[in-house]
Amino acid sequence: MKYFFLILTFFALNSFSQENLLQSGPMVGYAEMREVLLWVQTKKAAEVKIRYQNVANKSQVFWTNVIKTRKESGFTAKLLADSVEAGAKYEYELFINNQKINLSYKTEFQSLPIWKFRTEPPNFSFATGSGTYVNEEKYDRPGKGYGGEYEIFPKMLEKKPDFMIWLGDNIYLREADWGSWTGIVHRYTHTRSFPQMQAFLASVHQYAIWDDHDAGDNDTDGSFWKKDETLKAFELFWANTSYGFNDMKGTMSFFRWNDVDFIMLDNRYYREPNKKVGENKTQLGKQQLEWLKNSLATSEATFKFVVLGGQFLTSVKDFETYMNNGFQNERQEIIDFIVQNNIKNVIFLVGDRHYSEMSVLKKQGQPTIYEATISPLLSTPSYSAVKEKNDFRVEGTAVFERNFGIFEVSDTFKNRKITIRCFSVQGKELWNYVIEKEN
Image (cartoon, rainbow, N blue to C red; front, side):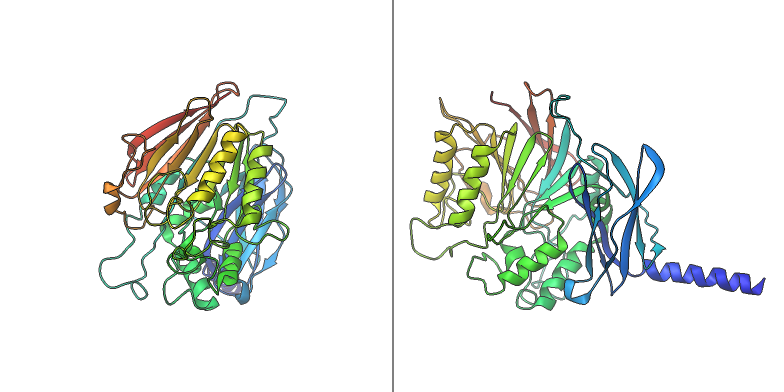
């Protein structure tokens, strides 16, 4: 009997020790019809894998690949669930060193359905926002913490979105961080380990772009000497479908959810400096600009989201808007391309500005162009922006407090629409706006 209890004690302690190895996650990444990517981070080198099963048919159990985490990769692992069926929901369990990790929240993911030529496009919703500053007093500026109201993530989870799009400034590299790989990994680890975020990461699919505070220091541009290292960290800590294309480096990516396309842009890797004199400056670089145009021109999606770190459509010439710092001609080139090619149902989804608003560019005989700015999640709101005069702002949509967005795509293909809702930290609806499909 004594040996029996010793064995039980050994297994209990071993299981507990494996749970102590979990640093952050698990996080659900991109979803396709035949595979889903999951992510996890450990505290030190360990073997990780995930067991999953179809909620509707639990007779079969599947396993992802096994990854051994390493210090040089931030102890992160990407685990591929490649035995999924289209249009199904799955429950999953995390194992570290062959021991199941007990989590207090729901762990599940979904695969995309096959619907084209069969049914109407399925309805879905997604969450979005930018500016995720998690205070760390030791490395922050003196005074009141820049981040706050951390209860926003549980409130976002209550809305039951299918996925989340992070609009940049997802980690806020500090002075002690951006000059070294050690600092960059520390900042990602500190933010990703945020307790209030874990349940949200574990059951909502996550996609991300970056902005200046992810790419380097404030107002980072293509001259930043550590941009390849911050790009490497972005790739390690997010589970997007891709990071650049062919020989085009950067965080740009693309995904399709049912009948909607999401073109994810990188406005930092090729960006010319704000203070550089010139009227024909670029944020995207020639190759990415052409890719954006081609993606819009070839897309047959009902709605086409262009996801960008800073404001594009606004008429305001301040801070890092596209109208400011010599980037206005590139902005106009993109607008002209949309108009000349009669590309309908284009929506720019942007962050960065520390306030939210809806903008609409509507002219007779031309496709309407929309922009939804959703910011900030945890960072301090910009109270000075109250005085800004955006000619395209929809009255009643300017919000100068921490907030998040929920986008609901619904109705039949013919009558497809998007309902955009802006919520406070407490989950109270602040405004809503409906975009109806232009046929």
